[in-house]
Image (cartoon, rainbow, N blue to C red; front, top):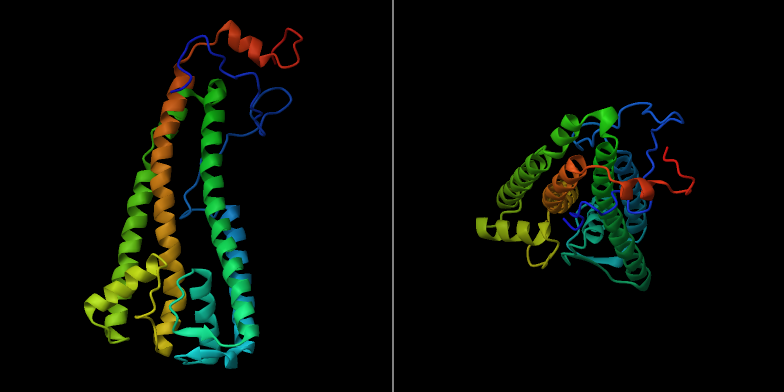
Length: 277
């Protein structure tokens, strides 16, 4: 830890306000623990879901109106528009459907940047979740008198991130297996080619030599591509969270074990009136 000296201020000259503290200085209600996305949905996840639905809806309609300006393997016009929108957003870009007019090309340029911004937003919300979780844990440690050191240590020592990481790895493994089997059975690709297409899709490489070319395949791809690409990103996020949890435990143990000193009290006296409270 960077702050291991017993003489270093615990508050480092600034206060960390607790939004749930009443004027009397007591918690109005316990600080909620960070919840798994598999439980109650976080507001950020709901917001991203709304943005994703709007993006896919507008993209599908836009590409449907210029359907005659696309060349390549076509199946159903509406399905092809949705399929092209998904492979554009995820930057897979197989190349089996490509714009062939100025208007269609400009529209594709607009939606590829918008899609990348949406993916960046999802990653930003994931980063906010990590920061929020760490802040909540630190606030608990700072107010250990009302919450209890044992409860704080229990939350800091949890292995939820590792379990979520393993669960996400299992899910992405299942998605890759399902994609491989589907491509082999429905798209009539060899097992190696099917697995090769799955890997190039999940990692958003999208070489384009192997892709979904049937109506059923593209309908499956619309859902599967979104789940698999975001699932892999979620796995990487949970891996980062595992390392963050280790850092959180070190921080909480340091806060709980450290004794209050005169230097800490001076740092807590923000208005320099000789009183802390």
